[in-house]
Image 1 (cartoon, rainbow, N blue to C red):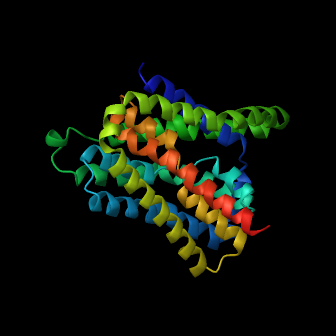
Image 2: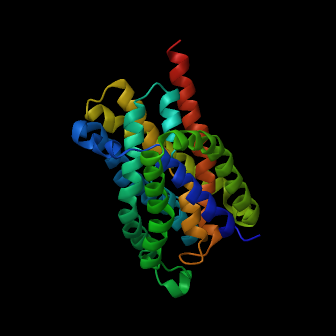
Length: 285
């Protein structure tokens, strides 16, 4: 089974579902509440990739896994972060805005950061890894930007139908992501077995440090409790489906092993952030 025929339709569907939740007004929150939006974007777009570079070197990951770690770190936030923010009694409107903005901003930052990650891994002839930046931009526009735009257009034109559609797709989002992770887990079981302890520890540290940095940034920006919780969740939660799509696409890396860090991250991300949500709700009792 070629995983790319699974991941690309799933990513498109997830991005369309995200578009169904968005309005143009969601992109304007940055002008009404610039401080929490900018704080979260700094954490997600700048701090998280820097942490990935640092930990990739500290743990001396092989080039394929190093690039995969950077890839998941520079992807946009996952759409399920909105649900996590709701469960954590966070600022859901802020969460929606951050998911929308990060999905658009990373269309441009992801190729830049990934190009750096590939280049610092040495000679492409040795690592056998190269990045066709143009193909990456085109794929992201077709599989990320276009479905989001179509979802937003459907919500604008047919609000009742779009609401019903979003409810159905929203219930499918998490199972589809887990199915996607399971497929690539099975296909790359050899790489995973050989690196699971080393990579698992690296990814866990990445998540924990991301949460700590997001907390520190929120405190420095003097955000309220609701905003703090949302910023922490948004910085930690990444779009694993997009990372897997970039890694496995025949037009970009065409290397399923690069998707392995995204698979591990998706599993650890939900475990860490669900624990965070659980702690918040327990302390509020």
